[in-house]
Image (cartoon, rainbow, N blue to C red; front, side):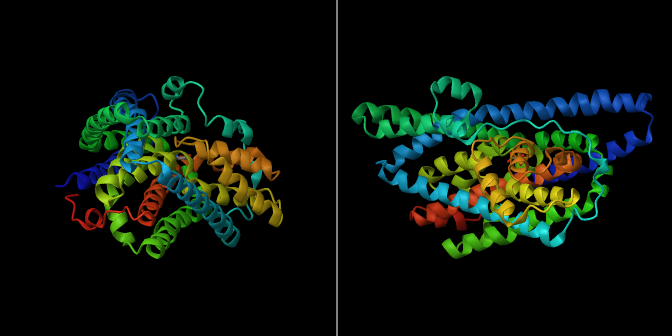
Length: 422
Ligand code: ASP
């Protein structure tokens, strides 16, 4: 069986086994011997530990990978002049797709009205974390200490530093070339490590999903079915229709093929609920299966994992309307525009980690004067939706990277059309 199919099978098996354990646990009293064994030794023992090791090993690759791929990308361009155009187009498309995504969320939720007639009595209190002001977010993109940035995993700062190093390397004559050679060798080594992680993925994905589904509890989903279904439907629509249109009209490439080639990335995104942890796999897949050159992928993919979160933006659109409906507040046209603006801006500077979308949602709600405690209404079903929107987030990064590569005439059609052993 091909590796991708094994990963997908592990995913399905993880969901089934996890849900089975959940059912078993809910049928037992909490302190029965069986429940204790399942909880202590399996769910919070074996599977939790394996899953956490898997995520940690993915994350450990992120900083070295972003550094070497961006630097190699810049040096492979030869001169840095084109980097400006690539960066401009990438950032522009990221903002545009995010804006479209929030609007879609707002429109869909307004039409479908998932929060209408809901009693808000069920809302408990939600401690909102405050988000820093936009000025600080922008200043924070520039590192004062690159090693601190790497140690803290501050992705945007690492990206800025790598761009600077890459820029300087292309202008540093022979010394620059020697060092660029070293980075190219490093890239081969780091990519090898990513390859090892992909080989291990079936076990990691299985462990993560068993733990998640065994502890999730589906009771809340029934109460919030309208919200859950509206958001899921819009995520699927964005992933299938909006990206296909964007890809087809701007590049002529076959969107179905892109999606098929991204399958293993989906599995990583779904089980980790983190675009950041999925980044190594996204980058490798975008380069070696879609045919996006390093110069574009090395920049677009790490940046996208940090600033481009279309799935999250859709959630924020839907959640805002849902909360407004539940509290019977009309935010008006100006409110809608404010949501589009803040949700798009908020996506910059928040790393792709599980649940971060809810933190930035607090910012959006505050901007339009909605009660932040409204988040308590949806938090119960957020994990599963987080997993699904992360898939949309990473597919968005790959789609934009392909569009930019094509516009640069740098896309490798032969790689894209090549049958890959899955
Ligand atoms: N988990 C998402 C991601 O990593 C972000 C979010 O919506 O919470 O892309």
